Image (cartoon, rainbow, N blue to C red):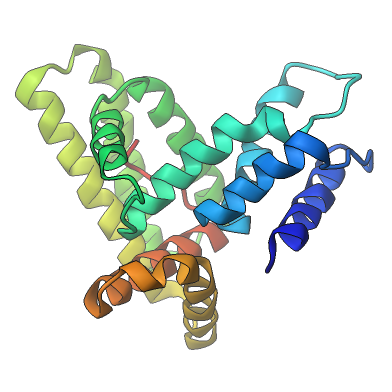
Length: 233
């Protein structure tokens, strides 16, 4: 879609999050949002950033003022960086790769992150009690993360590195189990959506890098449709 349509889609999504209150994306804000589109921020990621901000905002109690899209910028760009790294899309600025990698390995807020993951996984498991392969993986992860949460503040050095390696392994297991639980039609639909999301980056990727990125994006989409969170911070 072009930048104007991108802005209108975000405007409509924000209107729904604001209970029907329309806040127009115009002027400098329009230019800012067009910049997100030019960067290749997928519409789904931008909408999720809005959702994330609104969830925190309204959790504090009733608010008189509607949320404006520029308030959500930090959430949107952070989710975009995570998405880009997860699917293997290179940054336009090589220096940004180093900055992102440094941020990814700081491990700040691990207890809070695990609290959120445990809450979401518990909700998914409650809504999906089947004793299939995915269910067994989720049960194992819930047990392990519960144990890890109890000792996170004491993790140091090599023990912390091993903990993060284990979280990454659990992410791979969740992705594999989610794909195994999906129908062929769902996987095909996810491939089409992934190709659209990644299309702005196609020209600067090799064939193999494109293939790997599409498959990583498919895993993410299938997980999101099941409500499964990312295990690794």
